[in-house]
Length: 233
Image (tube, rainbow, N blue to C red; front, top):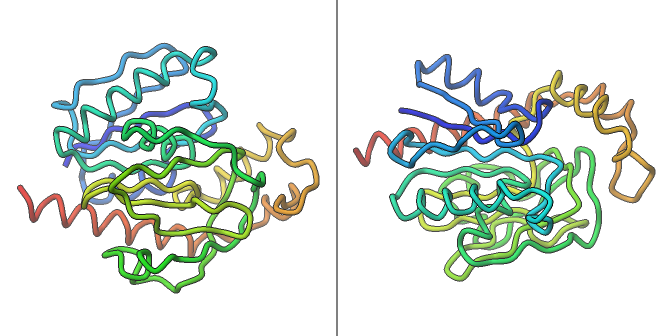
C-alpha cells in the first residue's frame, strides 16, 4: 500500500503513522505544501493522509495551496482512495465534499474526551472503542458535516469531532497520531495557543502526558483501513 501525507507545518508530522507504515513495509511519501511543494496525482497513492496545521480553510486567500489540497481531495474521493484527515485535514475533507469549515464554539488544546454519537457506536471502527474516550485536541475550527456523511463524535467543547463519508473516508477534528515527543514539540512551537481557557491544558500537562493509549487506538484505525484496502483490491 502506498501512503501519501500532506504536511502543513514542520512540527505536525504523521507521528505514529510513520512508525506503523515502516513496520508494515508500506511505502510512505510526503508533500510539504507550506514549502511550495507540488501535490501528487491521485494515481500516485492508495491512501491519502491530510495532517493538521496552523492554517485554516477560512483563510484560503492567505494560504492559497489549501484550495489545491481541497481539489486533490475531491479527486481522491472520486477515485475511491482511502482518506484520513486530522484537524485541518478533517476540515479540508469537509470542504472537498461541499461543507464549509466553521469556527468551533470553543478552542480546545489538550487531552480531553470525545463522546460517540449513535452513528459512532455503530461505526465499523469506533464501535470497537469505549463510547467516551480521550484524544488529543489542538484547534479553533471544526469541519462542516457534508451531505451523506455520518457524524461520529462530539465533545463538550466542540459538537463536530469526527465524520465518515462512505466506507473509505474518515475526518477527525482531533488527533490520535501525535506521539509524546511530537506533543512536546507542538508545545514548544505554539506557546501562544496555551493561554488559559476552559478547554486548554498547560504546557506542563501536555509535555508530561501519556498518549500511548491514544496511539494504540490510532494503530487500530490504521490496521482496519489497511485490511479494507487489501480486501478490496
